[in-house]
Length: 469
Image (tube, rainbow, N blue to C red; front, side, top):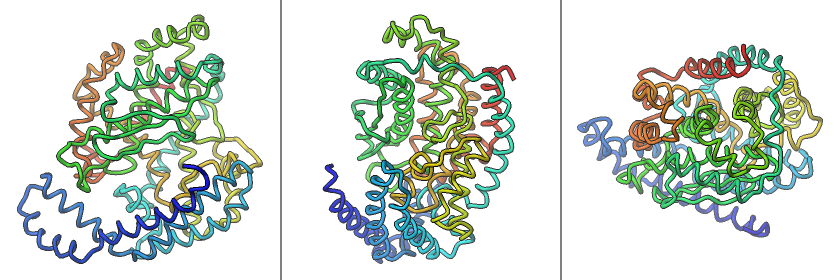
């Protein structure tokens, strides 16, 4: 879309938001759901029919609390805010978005108050991420994880920094592109129901179970960027492609929560894609693709390079170990804004203080600070960031359950075979779509509630070996 179409696109999105909200809150739908309640209660809880009625009723009740006119107005504002951000970030000028964010905070609070919540973030988390967790539960979970991560990060950064210069050579973009496509096709991404294109900020988008597309970005002097973005987005896409076709066209035909969705992208990108076993298979092929650049680079050197730990300013470029600290900073700032403890005008300085304190890095500007993420500039303040860390936690919990069922998976990964892991994920997670809440799905798949223990074990084992801790 050309830049000149942005204003009209904002009006179109606002109208579609209003029409969709009107459909979801129509009294006729409410009467139908009421009539279906006895039918739902007579069916098994995990049946498609009972699940469809249950999920539709919850969404009807949630949508009915918010006036359609408010949703239209808020959506129109988000479109205008995104345009302001797209100009403010290159200009490194927070003042260009400050008045928009003031209004976004006002709308976020107003939206939340329609639900009379314990905490203003609770309805935002539920409506936009469907985590099934409240803000105080997430804050407590993150506190426990931070207490494990901070000492581990300190231990690692005291060691010599891994040399990643092998990744910062000249790698022709077309060869990067072709290699990435071969990798994700082997993982299980179905190109008969998807495609990949280029973009500035990678994402996955779904039009139907039979049309799930991904995008990536390429940088000639950063080998890992396109490859791991491609694997990450294919993880999202394989989840959506794996939903049973029988659920197509219903509210069940989508991932159950942002955290569960992110668990799939992070499982494939990090637990599989950054594992040594994965590269025991693929590294010789990568060397054949880039013989001049990698012929004298050992597997050990390459493996350490793609798992280099170094505190940085940018969340999307952060290493696996420090990434969650970026997310926690944003989550804490969101809660402070919603609670009135932090004013929008003070947000850039609060951001810099947290980065200096938690990660030991500082930048006086805002381009790579408070303006780096688009989330607050196309949606509410609150409800989106926590899913990234919840996804990391769940990726390890799901993978541990997969290994318990199939101990042969690591050997298969070393041999370049992923059918068993992909099949287990499809059978236990993908096929169900939204039939179960995130909490129900985790309990059903792993036999226990959400816990940080498998993730902490995974990080300590991997980085303990990498850095001889």
